[in-house]
Amino acid sequence: MPVRPQRHKPVSPTTPKHTTPEQQRGSSNERGYTYRWQQSSKGYLAKHPLCVHCEQQERVTVATDVDHIVPHRGDMVLFWDRANWQGLCHPCHSAKTAKEDGGFGNARRA
Image 1 (tube, rainbow, N blue to C red):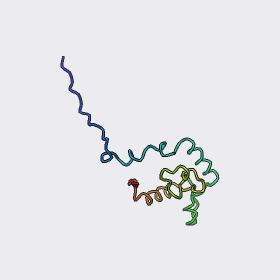
Image 2: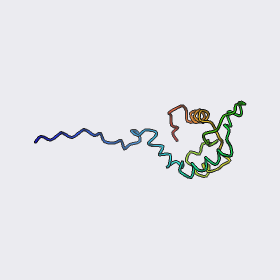
Image 3: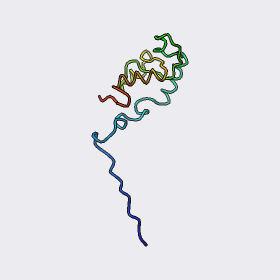
Image 4: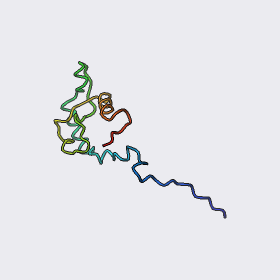
C-alpha cells in the first residue's frame, strides 16, 4: 500500500537573527506579570481609579492599566516599587508605551 510522503517542516530558528522580538522578550509571566502582579494591580487601581494623564488634561477617565512610570526593564526592585506605579486608561498607557519603545510594535532592544 502506498505511503503518504512526509510534510516539510522547517527547522525552528535558533539564532537571535531569526527570532522575533516577542520571542527574545520572554512571556509576560517571565517578565514578572504573574498572579501576584494581577492582584497587586487590581488593589492599586481600586485606590487610584482615575487616569493620571487624563486628569492632567482635566478629563475624568477610569484607569484600567497600572503603568510603571520609569520602565523597569527587568529590574524586579523597580517593578514592585509602588512609588513607580500610576493608573492610566488603556489609550494613554498604549501611547506612553509606544513612545518609550520607539513606536507601536517595535520592541526596544537593550
